[in-house]
Length: 178
Image (tube, rainbow, N blue to C red):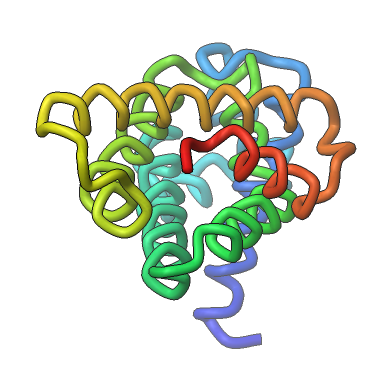
């Protein structure tokens, strides 16, 4: 196995350990010692990749938002396909689901809401938004939509993602202003 493959496997083991721990513990109570133990690596092995759990999450979030931006760019003129791919992504992403859960941190959740709001402000308003909105109305609508979408996703995850990504997409499209 190559060094790069081992490095990726270790990072994946750390992410999976975070998912496992967030099922029963608050993010604030999770230590790097616990993460390393659950991941099956040494503490120094953890520190080889990240200086702390916050850097680990930050690294993950950067990748996550690059993927989300790619989805919105790819489906620039088709909000149904964009939302469907977002829900399919959420269905697969265990760490994101764990971070959005009640055991995640407010800081991480606020970061995610803010990133979604930025996406809405910069991308969605232009691509899917209403042209008759004044600038302050666009700002308020992005806040409203970011929190509404985040709450909807958080509840869907908390309920075990029982509805399909297509059902969730259909629902979002139903409640969005035309």
